[in-house]
Length: 371
Ligand code: DGJ
Image: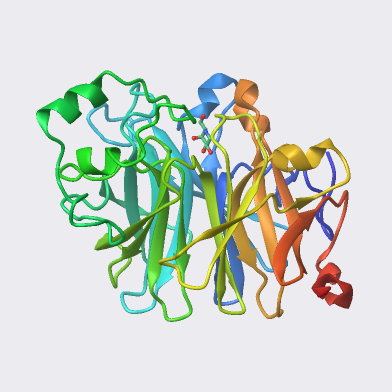
């Protein structure tokens, strides 16, 4: 085990203030009043650790290197009738602070126990302090009864019986397929709400928050505005890259442009990272390609990891950290964190491997290379 008191060592074991490996996977970070908070899935040993047996763990830090264990922010329940019963799925928790309500709002991907990933639901919990405990508000499929903004009048129709029958016969396991129906699933889910799996939450400069989630059996991303209190969808969303199969969304904004990191859909196995850009969060979005720089085979699988979050470093211009998970589905608790500095080349964020690095990296001027 390595002491990481003054640097980041991507992929190596990372110990907390008690010398225990940080247990907060699929993370989301929050900077609030001078302190960073790291929220993530608390995993247990073995394959059982791929579902939730403890809850969402939170740590705090002043310097991003040393992390204090602040305990379980959102706990699973022992009540078999509770949505968050031990053994359900709680993934990719993200916490944002709402200035008006002064509440911390946690969003997460939720799957009911023993139902695989078919539930595709979003959970919401709130707290008055960043470390919680968070109070569970409920879960749902977002945007029930709302048509996406970027659809035509012709598309705004619920499925007829024939379309429903055709769709019911298809197997849609969550990865790319030649017969994936690109323009059908959001219509099927109009009444009951849209499927929502991998997700993030992003707060814009004007305090408007957005929920980004893999929808339509993972085939299409949705970008959905949140209500002013951040606790539910506002009722406005767009579909992005229908049939593109993006997971693991992580959004950053730099010089007025939105950059979206994501992955392909290959379960726990890593695949090539993806980067997309837009001038407005509502699009149009353009795919730029793989943001990872070589040399080496690691760039074809995002350094063995999958994106989870982009952290703007407080008090520094142009300083962002790409945060990703190296999943270990056979022994989930041993999953590792890959934190790498984002560099800008020709005004586009890119990521290169570093065995070891510190925040001084952002003092170097060369990272802003522009042709
Ligand atoms: C990849 C996702 O990014 C993870 O959060 C998790 O849902 C796994 N798939 C499950 O296979």
